[in-house]
Image (cartoon, rainbow, N blue to C red):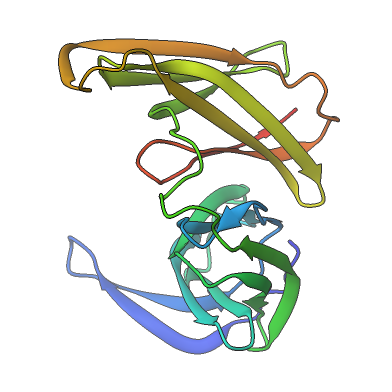
Length: 239
C-alpha cells in the first residue's frame, strides 16, 4: 500500500448480535490513487475521488474527515479505516473507493493533503477551482445520467439515463482527459428542441449514448461525468 500503516492507540468497540465485543484500531491511510478533477468552478459541487486497497479482511472502510482552509488554499483530508484486533484475518486484498463532496469553493489553486499514519499531512497534488463566468449553476444543461457502463472488449463507455422533459434531448458529448491526474471528463450536453413551455412528461425518454475513448492512452482512469442534478457520476476503470 502507498501508506505505511501504523496503529493509532485508539479503539472503538462494536456490539455484535451475540453480545460479544469487537475492538477496532483506527488507521489513517493515504490512498493509492487520488483523482483530482480539473475544471470545477465556483458554482460547482467540488469532489475528490480516491481508491486504495486493504491488505486483509480485518480492515473496514471508515469515514473521511475534511477541512477546507480557503484563506491558505489548502484541503485537508483524513481517510480513516477500522482494523479489528482479531489475530486471524483472511489474507485477501480488499479494494475500496470513496467520494468526498466539498460543496462550492472559492476560486483558486488548492493544495490537497492527506493525513498519514504518523499524524502528518502529505501533499498529494493541486486542484484548481475557476471563477464562474455565469450566474447559472453550470455553463451547460447536462443530461441526467444514471450510470456509466464499460463496454467489454473496447475502451468505450455507454451513458444511460432518463429525460423527463418534453423539450429536451441529448445534443452532444464532449470529452477531455489528463494523464496526471488520470481523469477523463465527460460532458453530456442537452439542447432545447422546442420554444414552447418546457413541461414534464409521463413518458420517460430513456437515452443511451456510446462514448468513444479510443484516443485516451491506456491506464487506470476516473471517468467523471457531469449530470443535471449537479452531482457527477464517477467510475474508476482501466482503459
